[in-house]
Image (cartoon, rainbow, N blue to C red):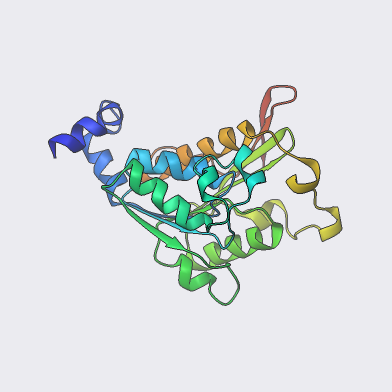
Length: 234
């Protein structure tokens, strides 16, 4: 207990958190979907904060081009499943928490089963079909969803379906056509951008766990080309 207090003391010293808030963090169960550019900082900061159970879903294996932004992985892990690497990272950073690695592709057939046991769902996926599947499943199951996305110089963050708040389809009713979707494979991304967005997603998650005021019915835009931060209400 003493070691735990020392470890999390810089969080506990925040008056609004204290030991009771830290207990909430330690007892939380969070599911991170995607162990890539967004998932990496999310996993890193939730593990550091002491979130008691972190489950990670990803079916991909690590490739060398991932390393400019997926910072929980290393060169020695190229070719290995990302969830395996992520689990090793979490366990090396914080041996006091449970990390569950799920090497599966999220689909309409398994989404409810995989999502239902967790308090908060974090969408670090990289395609619209998965984002809408996650959103719709969270709405069905009544799960709060922390959402993030990145493209070139811009990031987006939102909290959906939290305490009656709106969700992805209230903002974008239908996914765009595949041919209209830009992606990092074609247009690129600087690795620090998903680091910014993922850190914000982790912070929103911790605020939900702690019962703090959370951004609702707003989409946070991070424009790093012009260094402008603004919100869109919906």
